[in-house]
Length: 272
Image (cartoon, rainbow, N blue to C red; front, side, top):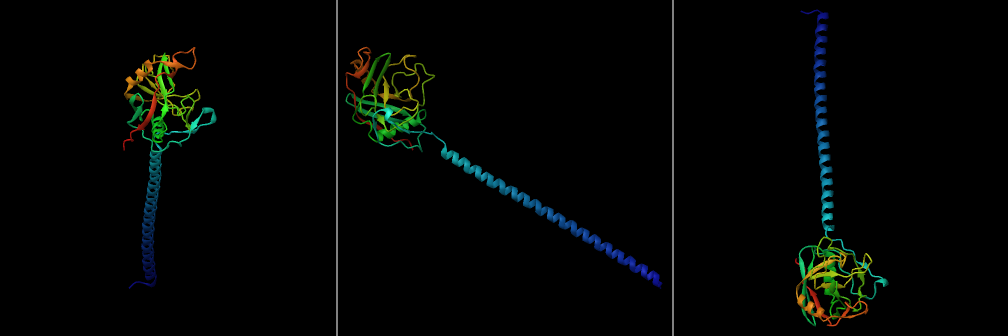
């Protein structure tokens, strides 16, 4: 049988083996725990990144939606001051949900017959918006076309509620759709907006071009808003009657001898 020393050696060896096994088991546990912890940490990182991306993406979507809502014509209608002349106040056009495609039809009944023209919403949305707004307020009804030119510039000018060339609505706005690359810039049938030399001076007055205006006769400074589709011959016949000049030295510019009075002016509804 083993001696006591041998028994002690065997016992010590057994203890060392047990301790070694326990140490190995503990190491395996630590490694497992570390792996699990790393996995959890990675999972948290992935989830966190996903959360951030999702939220950032949501913000971008919202920004995109907001940008979409804010897109479209940005029309500014400024209050008219006393320097602009007489004012007929019927309010201010809307500045949201402005149509920017297609055309609308203007029907103008006059003492010489019916004249129709289109409004080009795609090229001149702010002007078309203003024109339709004023028509809806009956702004143009029972007004007279106050100016006719028959030399170099061939236009009949209308839209002043006071019929003296100085009147307009209680707001003004800027130009758009200028005929800078068109020759001639104002062919017969053009509907364009009158303005003064001020940058923001478009109001209600418009002119009907009844004969091509040659290059150089009138600068490409006036908004082209539409084109006559019916009744241009009526304007031509009225122009043939001549003018009563305001200035004898300029016999081709003045009040038309053939009075042209707008009885009603209406604009068709915008396409839905």
